[in-house]
Structure formats: C-alpha cells, structure tokens
Image 1 (tube, rainbow, N blue to C red):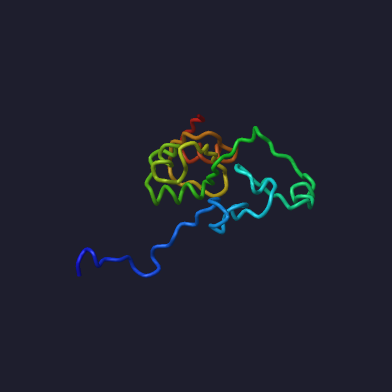
Image 2: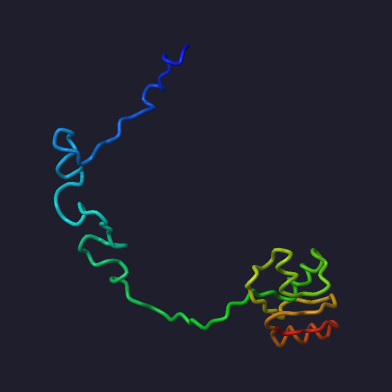
Length: 148
C-alpha cells in the first residue's frame, strides 16, 4: 500500500448537490424549491401551529380558567416527613440552607411547614411559612421557629 493507492471507502464520499447553478445541473431554475411563492424565498418561516387555512387548534379551543401571576409557590414539608428526614440526615436545624445542601430543594425554593404527622425531635426552624397546627406542634416538641 502506497500513498498514491489510498482511496476513501466506497460510498463514503458523495458529491455536493449544486443548487441554482444553471439548467444543465438539473437543479437550476427553481433550485429544488417547487415553484414561486413565499416558500421558495429566502428567510421563509412557517408560522407555528399553521394548519394550512384550517382554523388553528389554539383558536378553536375556548379559553378557560385563570392564572394568578402573584401566586407564591412553596415546597411543602409535613411534620411526619421532617421527622423522617431528621433521622436520615441528622438535622440540627431545619432551614432552606440545610435542605439545599442535602439536595432536597433548589436554591430559590420557598419552604412551608404543615402540621400533618408527628414531630419527635427538638429542632430550630428557619423557613418561609408555617401553618398554625405545625407551629403549635413544634413549640410543644421544644423547637423554635424563625420565619424568613
């Protein structure tokens, strides 16, 4: 085998399709774009959800409901869950930081504690919101609450 004998594998190299280079190329004239109109022009972009003259689905279906832009989304933890998490991770304080460090919430999440379940451990809470039932249960368990 010598350098002048080397060739690429059969079928691995294909000729480039030369569009719009005269009638003799077979791809002249309309340049494989059909005939005239918007779709043959440069920069053509079909509208999203275009259905070819049929009424688009987003206009056929009526609007329903209401989306409140001011809604505050919380990551919710019940007292029973907190007790299990405390056994698993050994929290000395239940705060957004400790939850983030252990991979339970993301950096920007807000945390709310709800009163479902039982809390056995004495913990210091630093969270965004607490329900009345949870607040009473935490204080009877000997814990403290700080609302951020």
